[in-house]
Image (cartoon, rainbow, N blue to C red; front, side, top):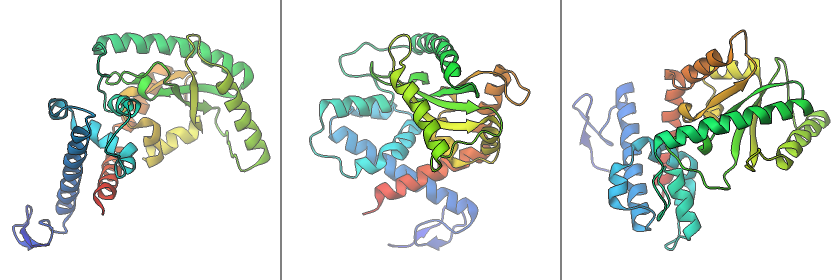
Amino acid sequence: MSEQACKVCGKTHENGFCTTQEGKELAGLEVIKQAQTHVGRLLVDRGVLSQEELDALPSDRLDEFLVRSGHELKTLPEQISGEAVKKTRRMLGLREPGTTEVSVEQRQEQIELLVQEMRRYLEKLRVHQSDVVGMILCGSRMDTRKVPSATSDVDVVLVFKPGFVLDPSTPEGEKLLFHLRGFSDNTPTESGLPVELDEFFAEDSLIDKLVAADPSMLIWGWNAKATRYIGEGLQGKDEGAVNERIHELLVGEALEAKRKEKVRTAAEKFLAP
């Protein structure tokens, strides 16, 4: 690779960036930009979206797509099934071809109806598991930028009383996990939506992990605006204050740095031979 003038210090380096922190950050942004360009070209070439749609697509949607599906793109076939095209477009927040555009306002109304439905679902669940104090709703059904399919499930993070531990490696933990998943697998919402239990936290460990910027929080909290806690208050805060705290931590500098790190890692893997 030929040396290039550094965009930070002006000297020449192999990759065009020096080893200062600013140089490393710029090098990371360059890798992400290259991956976004390759992904976009690939999706257009395979007929998943048009060039006009790609030009209008916010970069953060491509970032999330890289993290969640970059490994699949490495082996993307020349011919993609209609279902795969629909799924990919939904992940990118694009409507399916031939369907009517759904406005943000309409999605907000749908989300509010779902939240009320899930409040009643939570009441039923607590009859079966009394130490559940609440749940975080997340995923595509909570995202105003995306229109989920009719069969998309409701992604849920269960929150338990302080000190709760669910260790599936123990007989007790395995039994409890089987009990919880048995309930969710056999109990759809009132409107027939399937429910997926993604994560389980005690209320104290949930907040502790968010404060510590544990990157595992991004599994369900990648888009902070697409999360909503419902249930009892946590750590002396009411439901509204709990949501404010969760959102504050999810968009904070510490977890934002972890997001960028995940995007860069996914970009590097995608670009690797």
